[in-house]
Length: 515
Image 1: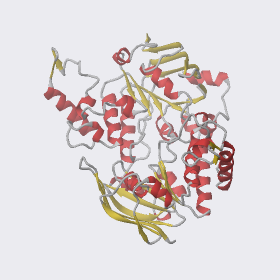
Image 2: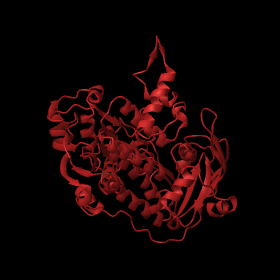
Image 3: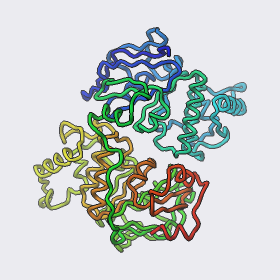
Image 4: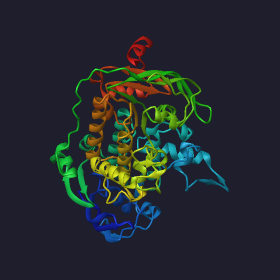
């Protein structure tokens, strides 16, 4: 295949001294699907943001079809046919699909916005690329997989020949992932070039033609996908063998630590988000909850952790009613919480790593002597956690906002796991964490289970849920539609059908499996 894009000697050093890219060379061939993999902080996203015009390199050159080019902004990149779809969608929820797709290049009828033309353009481009969307639907009302298609169609309408996708399957069901892959293969057949950043090596093997492995800001290998195994890719990424499924010894669940009865809740706009939810979590048990984003699982965890009020129902921790109690009271009942949004709820970005690690235990006697902080003890304890949880930071005095996303997540995980809980609410505990970090977090969750902790695990990663869960619950439109006590007997495709609302268990089976 002919070289389409060539990046030579790309170097990017951030103001805090972090070398994101160190003289990176990369070639992308015309019409290929090219995967870029690497641990957190390996430099893969920065490299692609440079190509898409979001970040300016300090050194290096970019060639497009053999001609040297300069890309100073995303709009310049799009003019050259390069578009990027970010992991966190950049759509306007209150607008329709058609309005989002034409946003910034709206068709006009005189001085007015031509809505019918926008709808027509949306239909044409969705048909051309076999990515069917409803142009009249509000973006806030469509599923995650559809939102991703809207983002891709936005780039295609603007003439993108090269599509960069950042973690494109992070929150998709198996069926949505399969649909996305079909769309990508259609784009490839029509001459488009796809670059995608991912942690999911199974998907890399399935869809890509070539793989580039990055490590510590460098390109360590570019290889044909068919010539390398998942194990070999992970070894190149991490520098050691990675265990994809941690060993989980059979244990007998103990007493109930969390009991949820007839829980009901509404969103801010009056939509019912939870419909009479009933389930329990026991000691030495990991209960997983699967569901497409936006189906009530986030609201459930917010209520359990004290961040949101329930409309009705009851929540018991070790038999104590903590319904609608404050976060402090709930934490005092030995509940810890790894939040879905680590930046909003999990950390204080202007505070140091040390301050974030100790933020839930400043008032404990070992750290606080009559309102005087034991700074030496605090530093010793936090340095121990940094080492134990392999947090990449030079000093615990570093502000947490200077860390990579994966290392911020490790800080949150370290604090919550080390707080000696009886119940851990783990909401997307490995989101943004690389393959080595993921293995580490999984080991820690299994260790907690073996130490009699009850764990409620919410994840968009079905592999993670199937690997860790003793029981699995599935939520759809705020309702628990399925429950399985033998996770080994179900597969990803079946889980996906329940997540999409295509299947639902009968009431008797559901009740029996719930507790």
